[in-house]
Length: 273
Figure 1: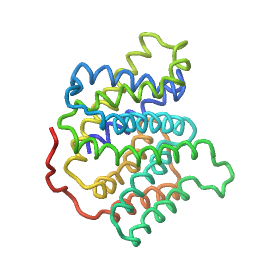
Figure 2: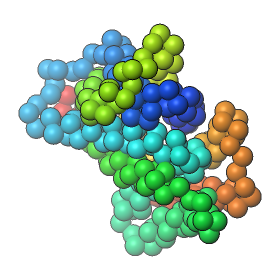
Figure 3: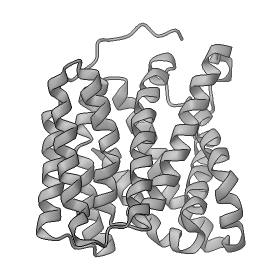
Figure 4: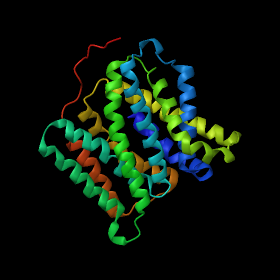
């Protein structure tokens, strides 16, 4: 729950940073600052890394970077609650697929109906680019959660994130560094540092702790609260007031996520280290 509020508060507050340095620049600054903080707080377990671990660590970092850039590009164009609801289709689809039941696929379909209510395509003013970026973030988020659970099973502690975040920062830096460089000053660096502390640092540490104790299905389903939290913080922080049908859409997405839950805690695993 703390991780959910941390990431959504960071997202809402990132809108101001996006206005200054752009979405890719904001993603790069957040991830770079987060990487520095984690390297100082939790050194990476270099001796524990085997050659076979490198591809999965690279995949985790790349998924984190793509998800962050795509999501920030989405909230630049569409409301926070709408972007999170679309992005949530990723972990919800993972939850449905992991359940092993075809009946579970009805929940992503129901959530998609809620997303349609949120985007209101019949009004004709839908921001296709914003929706597209949010869908890309959904793919990235779903992939990230699957890979993160594998990494969490392989390594103990939070030091593994000190590998993933620098990789994510390098991925986003290809676009974000030149976008942000002309606008970097003390105020921008301070804002980026505060946002990085919320997410990815606090958020990633807590998410990693959670996925070690829960099934991917249960974890993905509990993340159904994210659209509701995003709607609340979008209203409070960004003054984004949803229409009645958009509010119903958020409720539908949350219900779909909650209904998809199948089981809770994971069985203890024998870790390699």
